Amino acid sequence: MERIIHKGIVAPWQPGEFAERVAAWQRRHGRHDLPWQGTRDPYHVWLSEIMLQQTQVQTVLAYYTRFVARFPTVQALAAAPLDDVLSLWSGLGYYARARHVHECAQVVANRYGGSFPRRADELERLPGIGKSTAAAIAAFCFDERAAILDGNVKRVLTRVFGLEGDLGRAVAQHALWQRAHGLLPPDSARESMPAYTQGLMDLGATICLRHAPRCAECPLADRCVAAVEGDPERYPRPRVRAAPRALSWWLLNAIDPAGRSWLVRRPAAGIWARLYCLPVFARRADLLAALPEALRAHAVDVARFKHGLTHRILDLCVVEVRFPAGMAPKSVGAWFDKAAWSELGLPAPVRRYLADQDNLFTPRPARGAA
Image 1: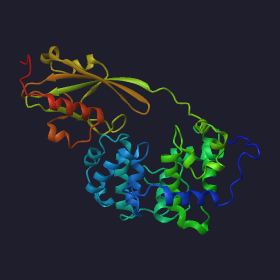
Image 2 (image 1 turned 90 degrees about the horizontal axis):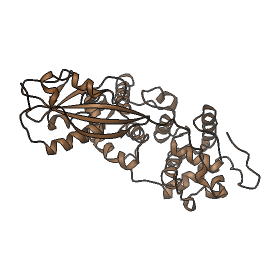
Image 3 (image 1 turned 60 degrees about the vertical axis):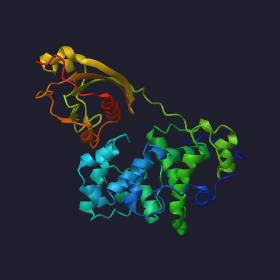
């Protein structure tokens, strides 16, 4: 993974020197005002770490605050219905995280008596907690010498040490993990683990940015291969990713005379698993075939928009059908007004659509209904 660095570009790091610089910088210049900082409560640290996966801090702030207010302890979260958890998570994305959070809380509450394990290797066995997240919890809460390696930290390390391997390959990942472990504070400086761990995160999030990194403000710049070479953005090597696959869905917005929409629960696996949603069909013809025959001629295409997922681009087409009183779609679901669907876990684009529709809707009889 490591390319050869000509002698004289940077001086080698002495044991503990890298960690000492990072920790000292964090204490003086790092972030200290995030709501999950200043605590060694593993519940709050765990929750913030899960929410921050592939999600910006500014987005997480409001969700985290609402979540902790609603579920102040892991026992409260474990006892809550999954629908309540999904509802609070709605709009944050990557909904598997919400399901894993609920499952993990139940395991901690029921198997561990409400106390999180104190070691990274034990934390990693809990639902939804990966190696880096487990290390962050152990380092922040229990001073364990455990290395983190999230996306921001990978960028910092590849630039500082001039590592050019493809991070999508297992051999490169293994080498980077070894590097991260080798940089940890020595045993005699375990009390530095929270500052060191937070410092790596802060450097990646605020200084060693993906584009236009602020090298002049970085405490590692004089020993950073990428900065000394003058082209930090060449690191890390971009991963080769397959183009997201387009997927067309037709959504039925069935509306009753009171303005309520018919919602169904998505399957337990797949896109938007376990969330409530408008009924989904692969083709418009399939949607029409699922309607009572008397209403098929009155189906109206009312909206079309795209929604990006990690590996999919959803092309969503909404078809509106007004149902008369006493009639409902054939799918297993129920009518929900705004007060009801606002409390459900809904995919973000469906929630936005229903909100826009609710603002415009005036109840009126179904057209052409027998």
